[in-house]
Image (tube, rainbow, N blue to C red; front, side, top):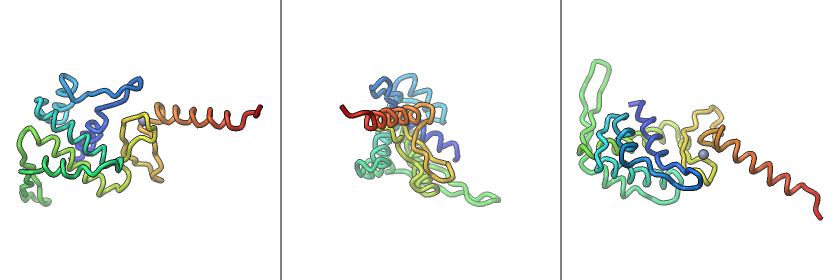
Length: 169
Ligand SMILES: [Zn+2]
């Protein structure tokens, strides 16, 4: 499911820092809107699983903590059922309804790590809580967005260089 890569990024990026404060989008109407956009229902239980999967994956991607235990308890009772089609096998995901969307997020994360190792990373701006999938050929993308964090960080580096090279009094 290629659109699940979008789902993965939408969930990872659902706690953006706005004016220095971490916000939460996986609650209430905003959470419901996000969940239903990707085929979920937006029930409180489903959103709770999405939030905990987000925290676990953010920790894993940042190498901050081994959150595989949380993922494994989410994945309990998850089964993939094969069905033959003229062009190969289709895999149907069977999971408890309120966990289904969060399981898809974990599957998308795993697929990205397998197909593009190291390309899913946190924005290099430490004050930013967004993540990116680097699809550039050299694999050097560092910012969630060049327009936002890229320019901000460049300006900061430029300012500190100017300070360092300024006249010493
Ligand atoms: Zn950023």
